[in-house]
Each structure stands twice: as C-alpha cells, then as structure tokens.
Length: 277
Image (cartoon, rainbow, N blue to C red; front, side):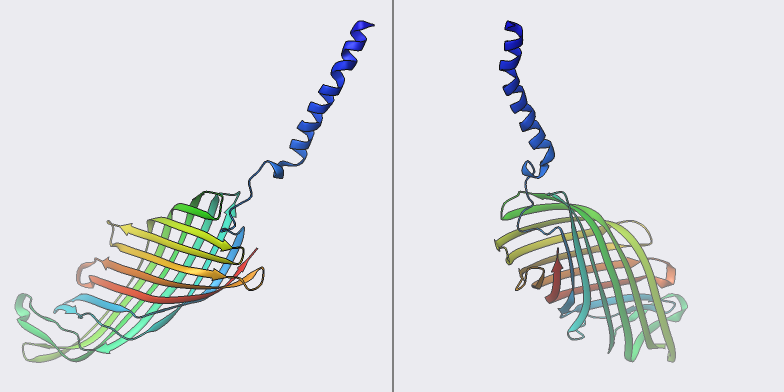
C-alpha cells in the first residue's frame, strides 16, 4: 500500500515532465530563433544597372598589336537579375546576372615592328565591339539574428567575353584591312562579404563586395564588384531597391595571334523592383 502511494505521489511530476517534453517536440518553432528582419526567406529582383563605362582593349594581329586608349563611350544601361534564398535562419544561396554590351567607333593606335612587315600604323577610324555576360552563384553564412547581420560567402562565377575589332592598317606603304574577333568563357572561384541592417520592417540598408580570380588557363583575369544601397517596401511583399555599384573587369585571352585583353570599369546607379516572400 505504501509503495502504491509512493508511485501516485511521483506521477504528477512525471506527467508534468512528459507534458513539457511533448510541448517542446510539438512546437519546435518556439525553440528556434526567427531569421533576422534584415533577411528574406526568398526574394527576386529585376532591374537595370546604368553605368558610365571606361574601356580599353588590345588585339594581337598578324601585323602587330591593335591597341585602344582609355575609351569613354557614354552611359550604358544593362539588365540585371538577382535572387536570394534563405535555408534555415543563417544560410543563404544568392544568384546575380548582368550583361554589358557596347560598340565603339573611334581612333585606335597601333605602331610597332614585326619581322619583315616593318613599320605599321592604324589609318582613320576603327570599330570596336565589347560584350560581357556575367553570372554568379554563391553560398552565404549570415552571422547574427538582430537588425544587423554580416555575411561571408563563397561560390563560382561564370563569365563570357566577346571582343571584336576592325581597322585599316598601313603596312610598308600598303593599306590592309584587319578584322579580329575573340570569344571565350570560363568558370572561376569567387568570395563575397556583405552586411544588412533593418531600420524598420519596410526599410533596410545593405552593402556587398565580391571578387572573382582566375590566374591560369587560356582565359583568365579578375572581376571585382562593390555595391551599397537601400530597400523600401511600400507594400509587404513588393519593394524598390536603389544602389550604387562599381565593377572592375580585367580579362585576358591567350591564343597566338588571337591574344586579346579587355579592361572595363563600370560605375553608376542601379534600380530594381523586388518581390519578397
């Protein structure tokens, strides 16, 4: 009888412990921290990057090197797409894509001596075409859970560059036409850092920087990007993003007479329409 009463006395404590355990299992969300208000579970942005490019390019030709000076072909607007997906509360996947395309008609210089060709120089004007497709996919680890979070990321970037030039050359008193075109693509490793700060649920600040390096292979170089801006959501799931970005591109393609180098600096504002969920 005493043993029976002892079991009865312990039963309420056991039931209470079981209830707490059941509540913990049945409602895991209460034990898991919510993601920072500076981050979205999923977002997709479509917009444009309006930049004032500074460009220089060079080609090796059978008659010498076709070299441009620093060209400023005027403002260009490029389409841009970004997307971010949050896994859990601190792990994210991000995607970014833009395309730069510009034709330039202007004077390029070439004056050198190669073998039996003697002295040569460009005559009149030359046409220069430059195009770059750039896409990156990266993983980010976000540190923090308050209004401010810092991100460290790593991933891969895909880029494809096309460079073409047409010019007239004077070679030993004779006029010859030179037309060269180079197109190549590559994948390179990338590192990223970022910071997000929520002023309110509808207004947020951000800054990002990334670097792409490829030091070997036929098509190599580096691409650096930095951006800072603000997000404003007049309605819960749709907002406007304004940013200022700087991108430096320096790519070299090696391949005999088809050697080429493209250097572009893009600097200017971006505007996006952003959907978040």
